[in-house]
Length: 454
Figure 1 (cartoon, rainbow, N blue to C red):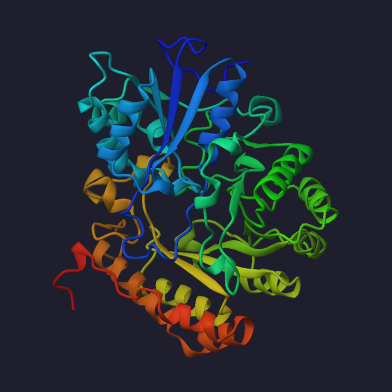
Figure 2 (figure 1 turned 90 degrees about the vertical axis):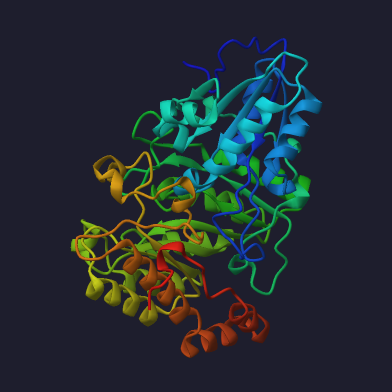
């Protein structure tokens, strides 16, 4: 079996490895108070395995500490590791590319730092570097891109998380995850990697080598939850699997193990509209899964390119189980026109879920869509992949320009979150303070490609 982490030219029993979790300010410009600060679980898993085979290792969470690239380089120069591993992983597969501007700057600053004429070896790991290894090495000056992991038996290959190396007091949940409750402490873990499906716009498999869905055992999962709860007082937890609600027996076992501990957790996970059996949802709720991230994407099957269940029925089932729904929509899929996007927005308004994310379609490196997209239609920089950034540039469709798609998305966001029916629902369910919090969210976004548009 190949090792989980292999860094060339380093003898791991003789050196220190510094693992860096980079931060990115471009993806949620002006929305820092709403977003989560998530524990870098990939860094924790890698550190655990590296230490197991004899390496000395530390984690620098630049994101949680708010460090600039220059400050990161200063820490590296002070610690003087022989090797640096930058983990280019957000906790959804599309978040890797938006980290690249910070990663490029961090690498440049490290190369400029004083290491007493002994430069450290820089390695990168993540979805984006795995998808574009040669370009990533050229842009960053890194010595090595680690292409991914084997993921055949996760319980043996990745046997733990070095939670004690993470800045646990700094992490906090999304605002919507904790309406009327404290957002700290906050934890996150995976129970599986990959996805059994192959959506053409998703790069989830880029750093997993095989296009497979691999799982940790329920026993492994509950061990991590026990640690988070007992050692760090964590009740708010994100299950970061690309698709948690699959494999009825496994999910039921995990939920049963959690429920029997009576931890009173507040968790959320991702699901699909075409797989939501009532008994499973009932067990999820008993375990403390109070929110589901539901991928609805588009009302138009021609725009999506595939069939995917009945979103109205799925939302009804989750609500009947007492689970709040954060629905996810995508505007600007290749087949979209103004009418199909309007019908998707109309569906969102009708469903009136407790929260909603409105995305534009992006051709992320590592996805089939990226491989098939004309380069002239891609964003002009990695910042352009960030949904809320000034540089955001979504794909054009067969019928619409990038600017038209982005303008529709931004107007859809405002329409949804200022709708009086939605605000009343939230006030009735969560209270007046939650309504005020939503009304205070940033509703207008500065966009370069929309300058001058009416």
